[in-house]
Image (tube, rainbow, N blue to C red; front, top):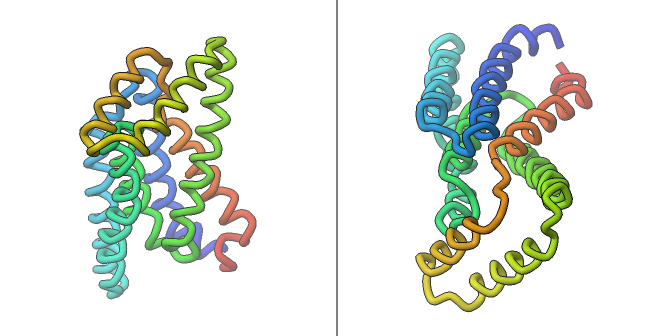
Length: 198
């Protein structure tokens, strides 16, 4: 465990700080800016390249690069149809770039971390709906979302309808649950496993 913390603790700490900065800005401005998302991704690649230089394991930068796209591409679909912001997509891509090469994490846990984030986002969304007292508006928006997914002729039409719906509802800054859920999953995973059994 001491070896893991010494060698991978800084990786997780830096990634956590970068994602937290993105989440705080998203909660405040309702947007995750490129000046935090792109450096998060690029620093992840550079970090794992540095580890490769030190250890001789040149698969690590490749895994980091692949993980960036594995994390970002599914969310890119949600952005394309207007269901998620581009900053959220890039923020999670950065999470993949940093975390997937960490021993004991890998691609499988990338998906579990996202599942935790989705669950937390649902809870936060429900609390937000109750706080604003707008359950019927949200029910109608949900019906319209499903209808647009099944009846629209193109992705552009789905996106246009989603962006129109956003004008009449309180938006959840999804970078917040994405970060909290992902970091909570990382903490749970490594504490439960005794930090990957090391």
